[in-house]
Image (cartoon, rainbow, N blue to C red; front, side, top):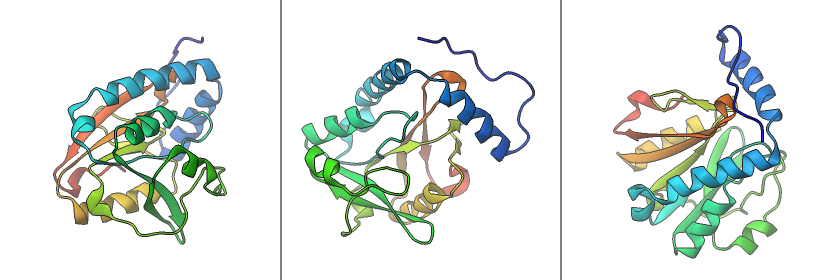
Length: 193
């Protein structure tokens, strides 16, 4: 298992440069390290009061070299929580559809990124109590650096219209360690970038 060495050199001046440096760093992660860190982060999420209270959890199916969400999705389903997974719709929007079982998720068609996406159906943003958010990195205030497509930015704006206050949990691979940051969002003044 490789030790976390952090970013070396000057601080990247742009989001694009930072994403490129972090993606290069992420590609060096071993599968064992990723599984171990994902398990530890999942255990921390499962222990939170927000998880315990949530009846509806929006999550994501993981890409390679990304925080592995399968344990969280399985736990939510086992606990009787409603699980909502994203589907990309054109031009640049995420909609979240309910997934009723692990078997159903396994049968979902794959997106152009190889991620299982739920079939067409009704979206119910009012049922989402907790959002598990992917990201390339998060700062100490839980501001998010995403993959650069803007899908989650658009989703957060739509979600804000349905929920005044929500807890978000984000996971990144910054410095080869999983770090969990949370942020309560009262309004959109500090929506993750």
